[in-house]
Image (cartoon, rainbow, N blue to C red; front, top):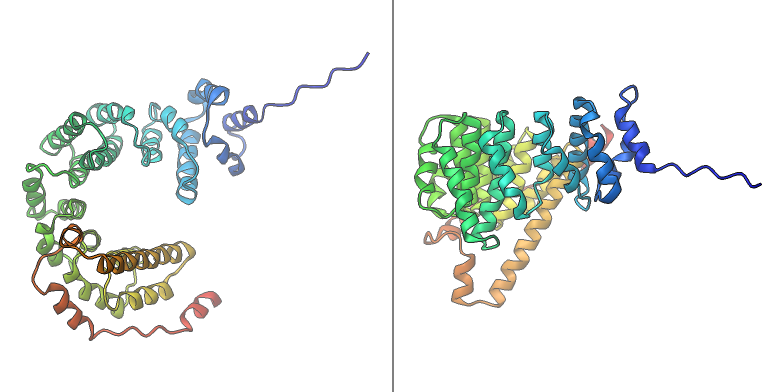
Amino acid sequence: MTEALPKKADPFKSILEALLDTSKVFPPVYLHRFSDLAGADLKSLKDIWEKIPEGRRAALIEDLEDLYDSDTLLSFEEIARVAIADSHPPVRAGAIRLLWDYQGKDLVAVYQLLLERDPDEIVRAQSASILGQYVYLGELGEIPAELHRVIEDTLLQTVESGEVKLVRRRALESLGYSGRDEVIPLIQNAFDSGDFAWIASALFAMGRSTDERWASNVIQMLDHHEAEVQLEAIRAAGMLELVSARKFLLQMVKTGIDDADLRSTVAWSLSQIGGEQVAGALDKLLAMAEDDEETEFIQTAIDNLDFKQGLDNFELMDFSPARHAKFQVSDTPNDSQEDDEEDDEIEFDIDPNDEDEEDDE
């Protein structure tokens, strides 16, 4: 009689067993298996989820966030849907971040419920932030108008409520995408508050608004002594494509920028503004990059500038008053001309040895 062969072990079952075994480090090689979970594997995960120690659940979600940041072809939507109902606040907050690129309307009610009732302020703040994605979709007409208005109403009520400052700030930032008239005084009041955190959020919302009414507010904060305020002003200048900010940003590059986050923000904003001297400035920033991540980000900014310049050339070839008006950001007379004349004073000399010195380090 032929002896029966042992059944082949279920590979996903082995992964779940590894999750439950806190005596060993969870093997990172297993992380990819949580992408596109479905069927029996998803059911098995749901069955044992709350049995996994909360520290390991939080670490798993954090590791999946890092993995998704490096490979956006992966999809952790299903495990995030499990984690968003977790009993441990860091897991819920991480789940919301994992769902950042998901645009389905079915989760809007979940985010609203978390914003209104979750006991953890970080979770409420994350919920307010992700609802901003739906405000944006509503402005594009990609979700029903009624749902769009309900989301805006929820965020408006949050800003004007007795909520903690962090949650109210995130709600204001999300409303930056909104075209509602009520949003303008809220942004202005935050900007005029004298509170640096609120000023930073106001600038963030100004950038999202794509409304040139905020140009002078943004420009006056470009050299602010508070790092967060300056960073958000520079970011907003790029989002608003403020030509009048270009000379200041070019001068920053010329002088040298010690902080990596600030370098990256300046690089991206310059790529959005475009124009004379910007390509040289981005090359200089690329030579100053301190690690692979920064190098990759600044290279993306260079690619964005190339793309923008290609669009500009296309616009010149296919000029019409209507198309020109669509892409015009600032209608200040001669703003671009005057700025270009000033930019001529700034030159960028890239030392070819800069990268070699970094490699030697």
